[in-house]
Each structure stands twice: as C-alpha cells, then as structure tokens.
Length: 269
Ligand code: DGL
Image (cartoon, rainbow, N blue to C red; front, side):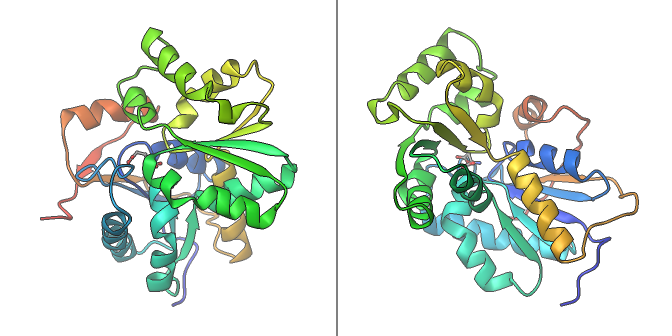
C-alpha cells in the first residue's frame, strides 16, 4: 500500500506512560502529526498474559491504521516484547512498524559492554526478549534482568524522590545480579522519569539507557529511509484513551509537559 509523508504517526501504549516516547518523537520530529492511543481500559499490561496483550495490540493497530497512520510505534515495552512479531505479521504491508526493544538492543550492542542489567515489567522480563536479543548479537555480553513491578505504579503516583521511592529503588537496584554492571537498560515506558535517580544510585558510574531519544532516532531513520519524513507543518496531535477518568487525566501531567486533551475512544465496547 502506498504511503505518504503527510500521514500521521500512530503511537500506542498500555496507558499513559508511552507519552515519554511520544514526547521524544515530537521533540525530534516536530513537523509530524501524532495519534496516540493509551489502552487505559487494560493497563497494566505488565501483569497480563502474552495472549491477552497480543489480542489488545492487534485491535489497537487496526484502529491506528483506520486513522491512516503511515507508521505505528509500539511504545510499550511489554507489548513490544510479546506482540511485535504478530503485529508485523498481520500488518506489515499497511504501515511501517517500530518497537522500543530493537533500538535499545542496537544501542547497547554498539557500546560493547561486558555486563548489563535490565529492569522491566513482569511481562517483558518473562519474555526474555532483551537477554535473548543481546546474547544473539553479542555472545560474550552478560545480561541480568529483573522484574521491577512496583516502579510503574510508584511513578504514576508521582513518587520519584521521596522516602518510599528511595527504599523501593534501593531494594531493586542493590540486587546482587547488578554487581559490576556497566549499563542498565530501563525497559519500561515509565522509567525515564527516574533516569537520574537510577544514575545517582550507581554514583553515575553506570550508563543508563532508556527508550526515549533512542527510539525517536530509530523513528527518524526509518521514515528517512522510506522517504516518508513530513516537511510541512503538521495538524494537531490527537490523544485517545480506551477508558477515561480524572485519575488518568492527572497522571498525564506527570508524563507530558504540554497541553493534552484526552479523548475517550470506546474501542472495547
Ligand atoms: N507500558 C508498560 C511497559 O512499558 C508499563 C506499564 C504496564 O505494565 O502496562 O512495559
């Protein structure tokens, strides 16, 4: 199917956290129109089965294709880990696809680390996608991953630098499997908000990689390769959620600094 540069970029996540990725893409490509979809009716994906996540993702991708998107960015790590291959299998002829795992793996491999840590949701950790991909690209790299399920709800509550968040972070990051790591991968939409806390925990001696600017660069490169970069001024962005509540509206302000009008899209009714 022929695509055009003026078509929007679709970005989706299990909820609001994917706005960290949307933010980075908007910063890097201000001329592109973004259509964001947060599946707030089903958040969190981190505790869901792979089959359930795949089912949700297929429906959301269909919605974004109906909105005429030239590219779909799977901003959610849990979704990228378990559903990306299904999405591309079904829809690769209709849009370009970018996930958040591949660019982070690429950036990690390029640096040639000996030992890295990965923190993520349970779904991402159980998928084993980061260790598998990193080891296949860099067989000598030691990869240690840990599910850190308390971090996402903690960040959504705005707990990023207080006694509670410090204790939770310390508890996770002092795990012995992270001894002597050279880098830590923040494999979750929410964790860029605690990037500096994590760096400080390791006395700024460990590289901290997250999927914001690295993914925005991958989006840019893929659009450029396909001659689909938009050079005209874009129409306004749109932000859809599958369930609307005041609480989601408030959470949005933690993740996105600009003005946002959340539109309720009853995808599951
Ligand atoms: N967006 C999810 C991810 O990046 C985190 C929140 C959730 O569990 O849905 O894995």
